[in-house]
Image 1 (cartoon, rainbow, N blue to C red):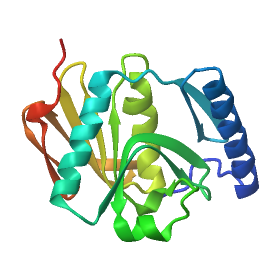
Image 2 (tube, helix red, strand yellow):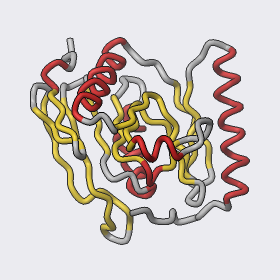
Image 3 (cartoon, helix red, strand yellow):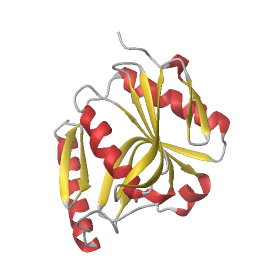
Image 4 (cartoon, rainbow, N blue to C red):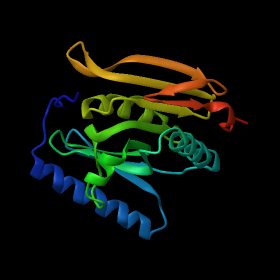
Length: 200
């Protein structure tokens, strides 16, 4: 399920903003800086990215477990997700979609949000509010059915699903919280978090 934001963007404006966001990201890359340029409410937000080894390890463990359980799952790290009609453009640490949806999509285009089965964010020390506030607000609007936040800072995993409307706003209807070491259901996949690197 997806719902329109309060001020829907025209698709022309969205694509102009997306081109500017990509130009900014490319310019930062040339300077040796890693940023994410994301779009919500007709505005580009710039987020500095500083992934750690722990961050990368958690994403790798998730990919391995999901692909071991489901050979038809397409897993993609650091992947852009969009919903042009609604004016959303985000980047997830991990996106999971069916192989059929992946093969039907344009290789050079971001993943279309309603085709995504699971989005996962691994929280960074520098910008936790992007995962806990902004993306938690945007992903249900975009129609992402399951959203998981892995937080190495305190060794927890939060899973949100399914999208619905609460108080007139798109929100996830259910939230479960787990500790590293638990077996965690993320959509159709059961993730053993025992190997996730714990905070030091």
